[in-house]
Image (cartoon, rainbow, N blue to C red; front, side):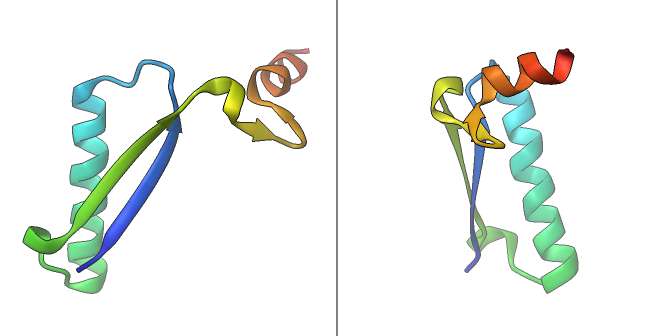
Length: 68
């Protein structure tokens, strides 16, 4: 009974995009580990951008620096 927790930043992922993530992860576990999709759980957590950090800084600051 696999349980996969995916965390993404809260930036407007659509219901269709989330459904594609869930289907894709489930399909991967079926193909690679021969798991039963009926007992495979995928949870998507959306995290506020200011609560996510990369390289020691908040994500928005990281992106500003990356853009130059």
